[in-house]
Length: 451
Image (tube, rainbow, N blue to C red; front, side, top):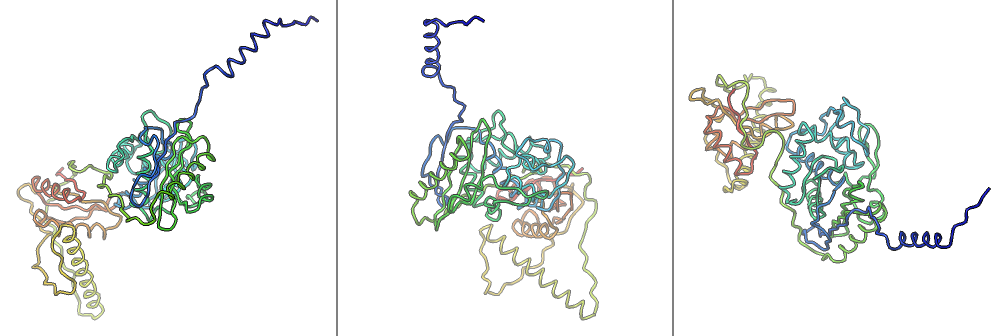
């Protein structure tokens, strides 16, 4: 067997090549870009920023917007927490992290919210978007409308979960803004983000942010995110005494290093923030919910063909029935007075003191409708979880806009998604005018046309 000996010259060239590779060759880095933002949550004052307006991949921080819209939809009656959502093949096929939903399965909306907030489940986030807008693409458009309304000027969403997609980008500043809105716009739901674990309908799930929640005093949220393109992201909030700080990091190298950096930024925020600051909550944006955008005409299948006048229920002389009627009359009178006072406050009219005697106005018929003159148009002022809520909205709106809604029929129609609050028996011109006046008062409205 022959042994080949390497010449000194060849050995020297080999050593030089190794030195060039280890010292002189360019180093290829796969680290995601870094960005950070720290604010005083109470005032919104920026306490620290670095690359805060650089558009980067948000990863699952995206789900903060998905959840914000879910909370908004529940509040405005588009859907209820107990509505059972049917899972599509598209949602079930989302890659991890996921809850493990199956195509065709039905699950309550509240469990989808829990899974998206706590476990950061991609299948749950997609199911939320499809439940509210019918498709993920339509939901992404709603996400972008909402982002614009919140002042997130450098954000573009393409999906509900945050998996890397071309053009799906945000900034540390915009995500900090969104975190602050979640905190103040929907405080009743904010506790979700501090739960170490929760039951999501089919199993118990652990919080992806539990390490920071356990390690940092006062931490109570908000949302983690990771993809290879984004790195390890986190929007965190912590409260100590009267102070609350929100810190955002994009591009962390690992969960541990990201959490350490966030803790350092939260410490910096508490150090720089004044002890006492007047709370200035962010302005709640105009509602940009699902269904038909404001101003769009919807053609209904049938027109109103006859006047529907309410009839009084027969009253017997039995004492028990009389007591029930009297009690009901008192409740209705109280609701009318409450709605009138609330409408006067919102329209800037003088409000009568509760101590002063209130002279009841002369009765005005607001349920009258004429079938002449093409009065087959109407307007919709919202969708609600109950008939009572829809009727209350109609009464409040009628009192606030008597000049254009006088003589219309208040009508509640039950649909698959809730109870529709409609005013019917209007001409096309009067419906358009009423809608424009209501929209000027920040009241959601769209016209309904004849079939």
